[in-house]
Length: 68
Image (cartoon, rainbow, N blue to C red; front, side, top):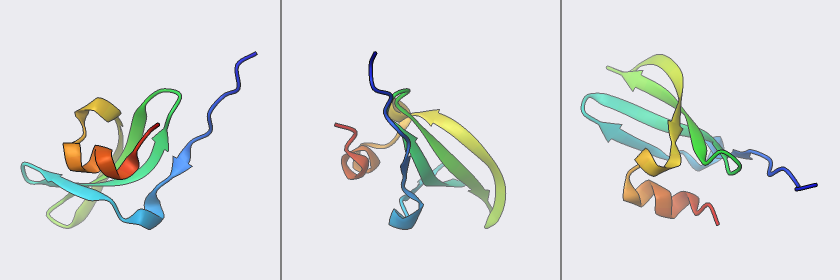
């Protein structure tokens, strides 16, 4: 059986990026699914938690996380 990769907690690294008027803070990375959980902030207020594909992140953020 294949060994399942565990999720990686990235909340301590304070990785964040801005798209349009929303700020996203990366919380957790799932290497098995290649997705990240992010907290969405709009106007300084926490809006929701979303799951985004790793491929949709900005290039600078991808270099910081390094999935390999």
